[in-house]
Length: 507
Image (cartoon, rainbow, N blue to C red; front, side, top):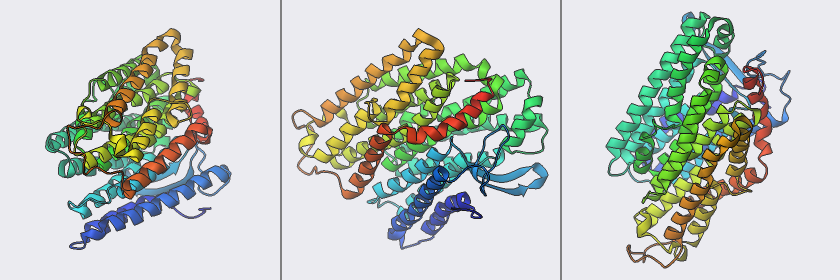
């Protein structure tokens, strides 16, 4: 379908062009949302066509296919020399690990722009920054050169910092600086890991495949353990893992709704993706040595995030802490080193991206319509907002793992894999299932049902606007679709996961 067409580069360039146009609108900033929606929608449509081509076209023998001979096999492969003396090249491609996250990026970017339709404060900068953020995330999920990967990784920090710092809540300055400091320090650890692999490999190339090949003979066990620890820290802070998670709740609470959607739905996935794309396949002995550390941190994140949710008064802060718990399942799946567990961890990233977008959008709906997100001040809103209460209920049920919705398949398979690996230690993370059901249902009962609250003026409260209900409704449809048919995604994740596990001698 795309023979001879650099389709991935085109998709990355579309939001970049849209961002430049949005920043350049001058006094005509009221058109910024149309520019942003147009370019992000174009990228979404092309990414959906890429998914169709990925599914129906044969892999081997087609133009744009790259066979890694033991590394990863990529479709829509592009390679161009950039700084030849340092071995830096612009290399992009898609495989089973990245295709779902690639289309998730274009989807959430588009619906976040639509959800922000009534933004009045500096709209050209607001929508332009959202498009720049999309460029950075797309680059992270597609690039196959460590230097370019790091460039895209750092690009993401800038628009998110300003989205929180300019359009955020009362403590936006504190939250934005804390976000930047935590994630930038983690990025420096990642840079150290990348440069260590580059010099140790001696391949004069930043290409992921080139460094992997050289590393098979050049990377000693002690080197792998040290570098894996640095890379794991760099990716884990973004995941986020306990105890380096404290930037996340503050960033979420103060960020505008669309910023929270992109932060939880996409930026957290960068950490999980980096572990499975970079750290584990390139440094397998380091991963094996720190397997129990990964599992312990994952279980701590799952239980801590769930327990803290019980104490939250703010709906949005509760959802923020729930992300720590649910992303812990990603890391736990990886730590099992099993085919099912690692594939379920990758699928959990995709599932959590869909579900958490709904949850943060519904928190935004409550804030916009009621003027507060404090659970104790709400109550009986289903009488005033029947559509909103229905969508929030479905979103909460999806997040707590109701069978038939997208999170169930991922979390169940992670737990099953943990039982296969560590047997009865399963009782630790499985406790979170009951806790998760408790805090979601308790929050739902207090905010949406029961007698109508008298703590706030509800005379002006009305149901969702079209630009709120359309994005949420679309996401709920996808949550149900992939909950019933998870194999649609799993069948493309499995082959890529198998290649990673082959480096560990099985799986």
